Amino acid sequence: MNELAPNKISCLCGVVTLTTKPIKQQFTACHCGMCRRWGGGPLLAVDCGTEVQFDGDEFVAIYNSSEWAERGFCKKCGTHLFYRLKESREYQIPVGLFEEVVTLKFGLQVFIDRKPDYYTFADITQKMSEEEIYEMYKPKS
Image 1 (cartoon, rainbow, N blue to C red):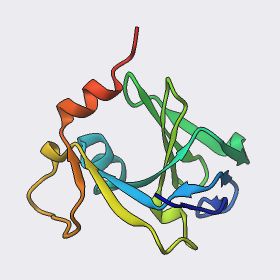
Image 2: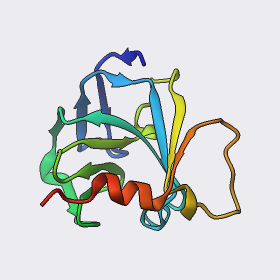
Image 3: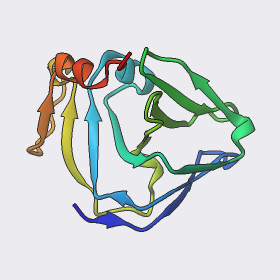
Image 4: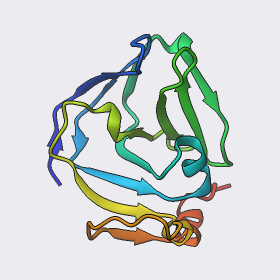
């Protein structure tokens, strides 16, 4: 899949900015209960790898949301900034922060077995269950 140029994005109030390396032209939807509670619906996110730089990181709060991941948000305005895997340090960044990116494709839905019946996406995507995701990201101790 092709990659897009580096991006500089920010939270709503602008005190936190993130710079990402080139991103893949695909985004993912997570239907797990935590993502739906965190944002009021599925998390739509772009895999930004491990090389994300922050300015204003003193305004970033981190919530330890599971054994393998944590979530970051702006302390001032509350903008959701990232979902980060602890072991690999890979960032999933909400697609809505990329205002200038318009060519993304919807490619994957995870925790598909946790998706409530009250919404459906029309796009044809790869789908992974809760069990498949836990197996993929369980700590390698």
